[in-house]
Image 1 (cartoon, rainbow, N blue to C red):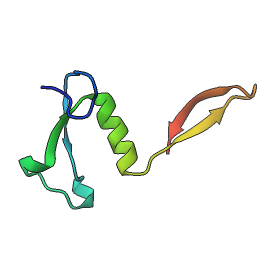
Image 2: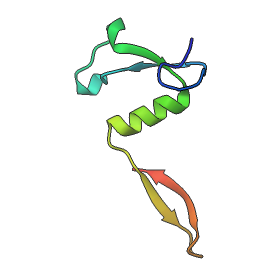
Image 3: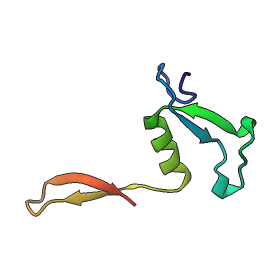
Length: 68
């Protein structure tokens, strides 16, 4: 199955709710789409307002951030 969000062909491995259940969506087929892992992660962060918090090591150099 092709990812419904990516601009390139990627295998969709996650069934995603277009409108999340937590926001009143349903399990109806019309509210579902197949996404690849990368697109699902990006969509979920956007829908729920997550953003990457920049983190810096004791040396002042950036380190991999956390999602909050």
